[in-house]
Image (tube, rainbow, N blue to C red; front, top):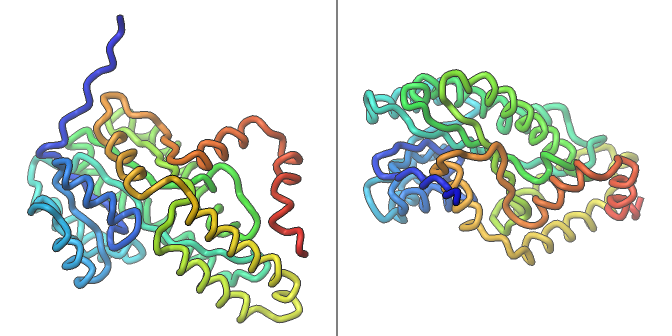
Length: 294
């Protein structure tokens, strides 16, 4: 009878997680710390780090100032962590930091698209580069947080999906490049989960449409508003919780043989499955309800 190999013990292992100020990153940082990891939680503001530290159950959680779009900030954070962990190195890096631009692509200003990709893709690569010397030392792990939109791009989330598709491709390349060094790379793909990000998505989307030329924005406004309401309702009614996401990241960090991809939530599973099985034309028809008001 074949037995599954035992999970690796978290005690004493150092994990760096970006974007830990709120939402899924915060939940993940707190849960990893509670389960025994030594967590370096990346935050952009001192006050965010203080709030996070106050919620931690032990001194194993340490906030680290890091802006993934600022190379000097990344270098300083990597140096701070290296000084703390010493020869042990970092066991794992969780690239969680990200933003979500939601608007019709015709209305998205190029600078907002660059910001989206800079945070979600370029930032993840820059952080990975900075921590790879420590990850090689421990023969550790990288976990890149994508989403169900890394499998299927839906209307009005094209900018965000572009970043998630790019992160999927980047993860595949990294996994193959780092295999000779004993560093594994996994992707965690959460579906819709109720977090504060949805308020930001609405605010950013409405701002983009407000600034777009009216002869263009007016073509999309009604269906986009309908889409925002539908998306918010889907997140609020989702049975998937931030703690489910955190547990999945924990499994990716402790599995004796980590998978290349983990889906969190039935919608993420469905997106990954349907993208493999259905022709584009069938997916297009299925998603046409999003834009039916056009």
